Image (cartoon, rainbow, N blue to C red; front, side):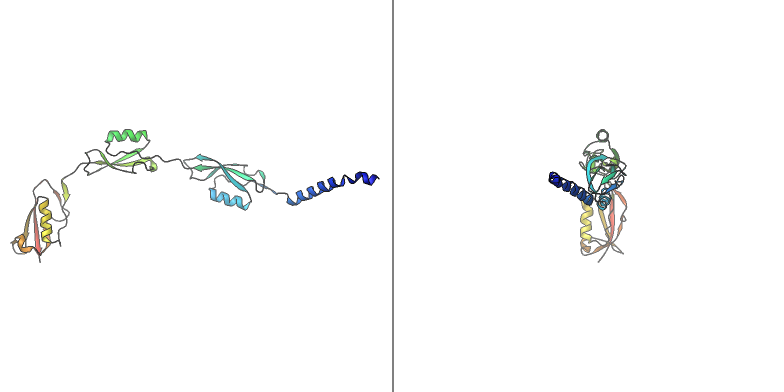
Length: 233
């Protein structure tokens, strides 16, 4: 009779014993949380995978001194006891957005200074020949709307059109084509062979063998110019 009174207890005893045995067999080992701070994300995830840990990015923080994707905070902290498969929560750096270049095209220097100051940018000026009005921006780099690296924009101001030109190389060119080109720019032409002056009609099939002014000479298109060409068949 006494044994029968306690038989109802046996299922609970077996349940508790089995639970304790299973818990012991499948218990998850405690490990120390790794140090992730300062690691790039790929290295951090590789380290966590080796320890059977999960990683979750919970926040981003701008940092001008660090590249993008570097871990700057973690939870649990390094050294804390955690279970395998437990998530590691990370805060990583993100790139500070670069400023965008405003449009300086057609603006004069004073207007460019105001616009660049409002955008927190510095300007490097360059003078170039252009058909734009003198002193106006005719080009810029980076172009308007593009990101500005190191907060510097190169601005090209028009110096207007000058009549100074470098005289071209005419040697080995057909005489008729050279004459047409020079006359189009208001220049006079004198033709000669090694021995005498010749007329253009006599050298229609000839090439230029020597020239004066020499190629690369600086000339002023406003001033009259006599071009001497030596020719040969």
